[in-house]
Length: 232
Image (cartoon, rainbow, N blue to C red; front, top):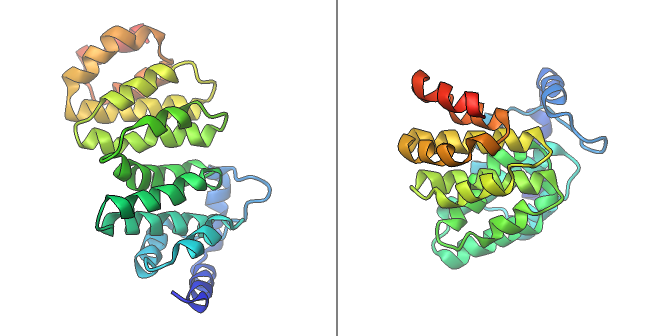
């Protein structure tokens, strides 16, 4: 893809921006002072990513370096498209490397949640999950959330161990956004295997943040849920 095509993508983002959407995003994202919001809806961003999935790695990196929130978001969605179409493990590894080299630009919850499972998580289906431990130990809230949310893809593949390990490792994290993410991932495990979730909570619920337990047990039968919520 030529640089003129990249500029066309940037132009399309601005043409598709909606002032009302920008106002909504400013409220729900609480962006950093140097973060520029255009106001483009996520489904629109996904469509643009599909149309521009031929971006070269240098162009993706350029978008990730942008102060424009939606440029970073569409870059992450392009990586997700490329990961979905990657022909082999080597190609997926290169995409994961780009992602891991730019985690400092994945700096809000929508960027994390829209990219971590479909980029990093997809790569981890074929790789050891050691990178999750490194991210979970980061001083960056967003890198810690990336570690947690990336396990969604592993959960859907029936691999719960990495999530359980992160819940234990991050149970004393100071950030509510981490507590909620842990509960979300545990709830996803419960959707696939309620017994595995219940067994984990039998051992660990008393030491988990209350909000984590509440999120984790939302879909449980009431008589089972109340047991854990009281303890959590």
